[in-house]
Image 1: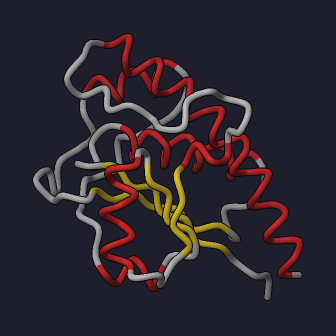
Image 2 (image 1 turned 45 degrees about the vertical axis):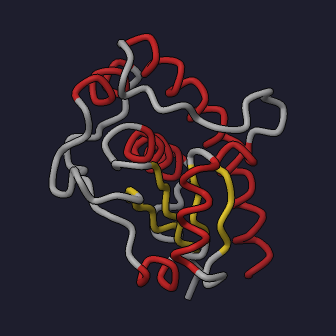
Length: 161
């Protein structure tokens, strides 16, 4: 049986950045033929929006680029996530610190943009308080980060074989 890898994207409320990252990454792993080997989900460090769909502006920006977020619903990060996922990726340092406190070293926890080392940005900014341009910019960052993450995932899966 082929080895698998599980990845969790995390932002604060799980209605903007992390569902956008999940949607883009799901599309890329499907294109790469890896959906049977890579499990993907997203969560928020707060569960205020639990059960809600992603922010309309996030859904619109993603749809314009061919990514579907319609089936996603917000949820909060749980301690169980730390054991269930191989890699937990935070969109910013504030959430990275919250995740590390929750996970107690159980999972590999990193900043998402660690996978985009050629970018000056180290964090994906929260577009929630701004306009549509902020969501487009965040999606630009996510696409670059996902490309680097996909390359890393391929290396990890090859190493497991």
